[in-house]
Length: 412
Image 1: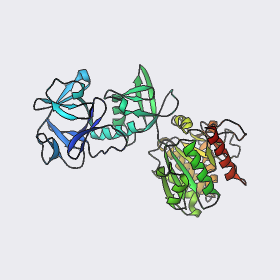
Image 2: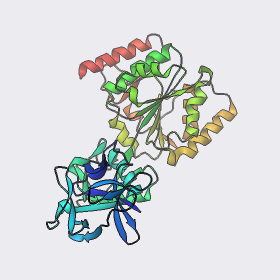
Image 3: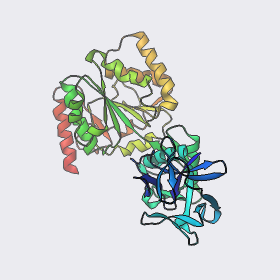
Image 4: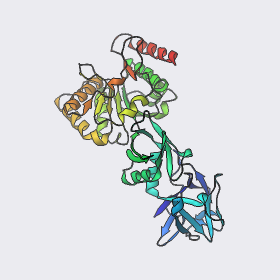
């Protein structure tokens, strides 16, 4: 079995050009280039995490052997909550200057490590690189791995003990969606915030123009950093150009013909495309985002029902946004609702289908106006922005959207 090696200041040992280095566990780290402790019966030695065995040569201090180049001792160190790694009377050390070597001095924190099963470390890496909503706190938070150690990690205003994260990583599926932790005798829960927004854009007319303005607002006022899926009959490069430089790398384009647009857009809910996201938001292109998305993404993480923005009375207004907290809890309801809609009549359009889906979910007791309706900005001039504003289907809508966005820019 292979174990990743964490240093006391929460770095991980990696191998580059055959030598051992320290790296912070951040997005982009190569999981095939980790230094691992590999157990062979009662013995242990160093290998890499990639396919096959690439053993460490203790004489040259480089990887590349086909067989073990020596064996290490693993010594539990309860007082420092870690493990000492000894070879030939010397202890492995990872000092603050990113140097890794063996020393003869008595072991302290620099010579103490945490060994984490390789599969568990892969899930732990996902946890520490994702965004989280914490119960009782506003906003969305990320781990600060550079202010962390192998006992606890910095998150929001507090710290999360590493053991809580390892338990979550071991018990979860490929993408952990929540974990419990204690800080100062207070038990808290963190929920994953990994959003995706889905748009349908067809033709070179109003939909295309509205989408361009909506994307500008999502970047400038919404400060959005999640993923975007666009179902469209337009070229992918054109869609990314409309989205702008900031959001273009976050866009995944799903090609569809104009006649298939409604069915393709919502039928994506019948696939596993959104299984790793929390929440999933379907949006029409007539929405201008006027406040940071974190204002309702943090609340969305705790929702027990899907949410729409058409108001609590469902007065016939078509929803502009539908928020699905996650597919794990709501996928079966969503798929059953879509089957019910499409069995009765052909799909007439994306917006109408979105409204019908909301109606069916409401009858299934899986739809609420909260939290989205509370963040829908009023159309009254001078009203304070709450999160997003929809613009009715009428002449001059694109210009009205641009004017509103320009006003918001002038206020910031």
